[in-house]
Image (cartoon, rainbow, N blue to C red; front, top):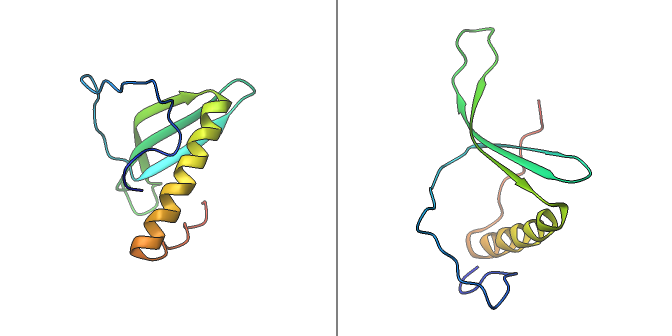
Length: 96
């Protein structure tokens, strides 16, 4: 998506002076009546042949359900735009 965000109030100035950037290759979502929690992490190698892989959680975002809905709409649009430009993304692997 080039240009402007899908949904942003017009009278807002984004201050990124204290922003940090992190990368994640694993994401988990949980929710309650009051909040939606997004946990992002990095998959670490398993310690042994029979050991389960470990996810090092780097960031956790807590959203209101309304903001989670807005985020869903923005992510859906970004993925549509990405696939239109670069081709279809592979389907996600099934949860283990």
